[in-house]
Length: 629
Image 1: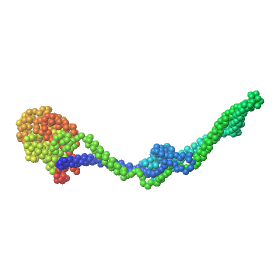
Image 2: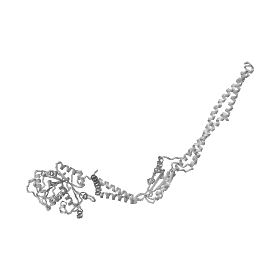
Image 3: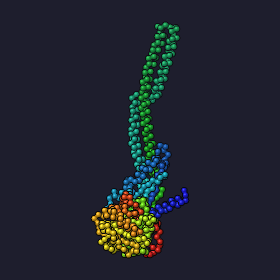
Image 4: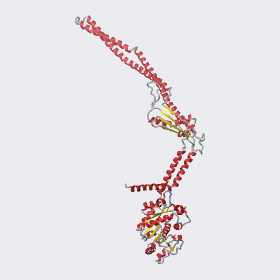
């Protein structure tokens, strides 16, 4: 990128920053008002509220409860997970804890934060109101990535603040212990009830076993069964021996032999005994099964009873211990300085807030203001050449007429503005062929007559023969400004085709005046007539400059009609008053009849300090400012 282009971009950025601060400077009283208002409110608030003190207690909730017993089946609570800590935060914030703290500290009186009002009225608050106030002045926070919980208590009395913070922690620890103890006590009560039930079952089982023994004459079911089995084995062995002997005797004796008969009789008897003994042994086994069932019932009931007794013993051991997983890490100390109000912070915030609100409001006003305010607006919005800026400094000198200030007060800074305007018009017309000029505006009261008069004066003072014509047939004013009669003027010339023009000489050298004359019923027709064209041609031959003061464009069509008869048109825009849409519409109307607008003048502009219109656009010399003073 070329250096000259870089310089151009840097210059534009500097202009934008300058314009930004210039807009803020223009609204300085708005910004100052917001700052003063916010600072005043902050001061009033800081000195009217009660100083509030904050005391802090920190407690630690461990993940495990200390283990001081050796019973393997005693399982103490374990605390893990963020949900547990969130639950404890909720418990700490509960009304139950607040009620316990309220009782522990001996009551609580709500206070009013304003010094101008009574802090409290003893006895006028209900318990519920007191508890709510106590809860509202305590803040519970979980310190992330730790096992710590912070308890902050606030009060206008620093000792009460520390008392509340410490009491809150102690009450919470006591509440946690009591909750654990109540659970152990509940378990003990339940165990005792279950032990009584188990004891009854043991007695009932033992009784049933004993009754069964008596009914079946059972001393020891296992020994009785063993004896029966042994006897049965003996019978079976004897039966086998008889069968062998009987088989051997058949070799020597016949069936009818007494020895054979005796052996058969004994064998038969043995077989009957074996059969009877088997039936007896089977019945005995059935009794033994039922006996063992009853015996096992007794053993099971006794084991359950013993287990309950052991658990009750362990629970009783824990009940005597006051173990907690919560401990106080930092006790609250009596605070020496209040946390609120922080006067320095309040004032800093008030300054920032006031400045922000002031700047925001200023730019809001600027965005809502649709008027033309700067030369840049003329160039960007209207796309017209900017020919000059007329400041409103002449309004400070009420002794001098604004229309004649160039002639009456040549040391006024505004004279330089009109001289610059004359120079810009002259440079836009170097060959002097464009002599006739219409001066108009979008609406009334925007200074077109004042600028017409002073512009004609500076042209005359420059040595150019100039005539100023009052073409405002609706509200003519030039005759009163110069103190001449309005009996005859341009209306008589146009209506009667007079050859002899009633032109007035003024005390300003080279400046003549042609007043309106009688107000005609048809101004537009007169201005658009052939007589008007001939009249302008004749004046162009006599004068170097012919300046017409005309009505506003948006009010009547006179200026638009006359603009088609002259060389060019000068558009007057009042700074901060003329609406953008009105000026745009005015320029469109004039251009629609193929009339040429030489440029626009920004009237009634406020010269700004520190790089305002004077410095930025014209660079007025310092002697003008001194002469003004």
